[in-house]
Length: 65
Image 1: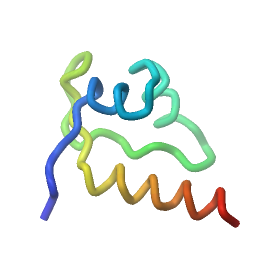
Image 2 (image 1 turned 45 degrees about the vertical axis):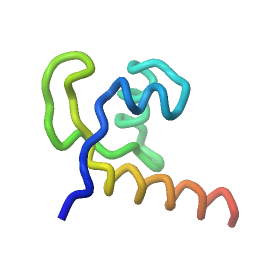
Image 3 (image 1 turned 90 degrees about the horizontal axis):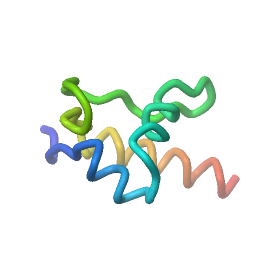
């Protein structure tokens, strides 16, 4: 079960970056950011909190290795 969702604006505030940066991360070949579960226009895209937290764990593990 999904914990909930974060909007593009929520993620931009969380990572202190622009929404464009979030979408660039999604397109990266190495360690891409998860795609939104619900797509709409602008900051109305919604990312599953579980997906984002899993990505954060993966990034932290790789940085520590």
